[in-house]
Image: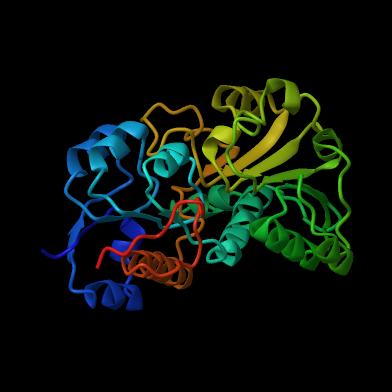
Length: 327
């Protein structure tokens, strides 16, 4: 019987590239769905699949309970595994694979798209000319401004490099610190997260979602930031408290919020952040370019194929779980 594979990530499905050929060449049965799926939607599908290439679907303990014992490999298309019960994967002996190092350039570029859109009033001006007008608002330069980067992994490093190219002053904060990179590029390390909050004209978030980072940006931390700070979020929506950031935007305490992620995706029609004039929201597409999708998708397929064949994947979240040959 052919192995059956569930594929839910839409950018994988919608973007042409060699990843489609690599998956088709396996000869396995491929079943597609349009994610990201809720827990209920995922539960309705799993149970008869040997492998799963997932995006930001809700893969809870209940989902994994139903998926086992047939599910042998879970290949995450991307790097964030906060929607996956990693502990349950390990407990059930399901290798969880992921694709680090494939989208850092793209996300860093998107961070500056959001920042420039806010500082140059891009949407206001584009809307004005598109409607036949010629209204103008005065913007701000990036030159000389301090950008505080929370999370100095691959993406944070790329943001810092681009900030230097704009003539900005980046400062970084991370519990793990690459001293060689910081020295090469002249990036000072903040002694604490409060130092970043206090010094940054722009605060750029590039950290994982953990219990410690959930609601990292909230009313009391905003109060410790510079008045008129601009906050950028290309990480996870839950790192920023929605009600608190909306209130700070309305009061002007935060001058702008540029985000590619929300606490609800897709958002409900009355979500408090989608209508504010000083908030720019993009629909979680910071890593979605033809180049990065093809890299990420091919890595996810390679991980799946290797693991199904009992070979070492490119990267595994739970390396303590052995890889068992399926085909």
